[in-house]
Image (cartoon, rainbow, N blue to C red; front, top):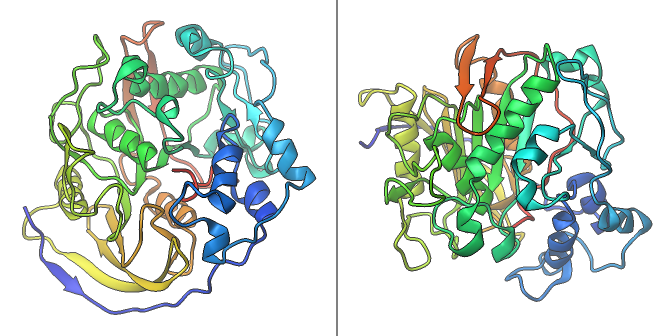
Length: 395
């Protein structure tokens, strides 16, 4: 199905990024089990990336500051003891996330090791204590930092293919719901590249999110289901299927992406095949209730590509809570800014706009992942958010 367009023009220019590398490390990126530091350093001055940020004029090549060294050594904190159904959120300093109380997650996923089963959580002051009962929780899924650091989205091989990452994410959601009694916020998910592929996998398997954002990866066209991991309840790759359900969706992609092409096709030589980004948006629109006679609005806004070039982005906005951005000249990093905002900020604003859109109460029971399942009644509250794992720098 192809929707027709209503076109308007609203070009906005944006100043190129001028932050220092220390600011980018400490305030722009919360380390994810040390991957944040390692990959960010490579982004700034590493030769492995096609366009290091130092070459793009975003930050200058620099030595580690004290704040950056702390981020490098941070292992996510120590384990804490939780009381079932009695925990409240405790604020932490910006850039110093704490470890989520996660005995259930670690018991289910002990094969990952004690560090890998830890979940870092960043809580702003406005979400501490009782105020946190209506704050949303935003999952930030990093991109592939190497073979062993990938999320299993169906196309992986070897040890990665044996990990059920959809079940892993759902177990974290259930752990939050069981520990933090009275919490009634929203679950949102945001990922880039391999992390965005996981976002699409979560949508295809009806994981219970209230809004999702994917950058630099679109829906899988075929195969419709994965073979691994064996015994998983979450093998669907694409929509539609019996599990997929309405979910507000944001997609951001550069039309010059040489890693995951905007127009889709075979993924790294097959056998997986991707839809085009635009077809993915149409599919999500149908899932969310748009009909063929409904139109999307097409506008043009200013953008700065991931390599620092001044450009534009075409925004496709559907009347059923689906939005897509096509960044002209954007590569796999998508953009430094879209409409004057970082892609992370674009995603956060999208989540704020769609908060409460699904139903005032969504009941979802997760079973078959250990512990017999948890009945999750998810309401919607105020949108209050602190810092988030940066996305355009994590490939």
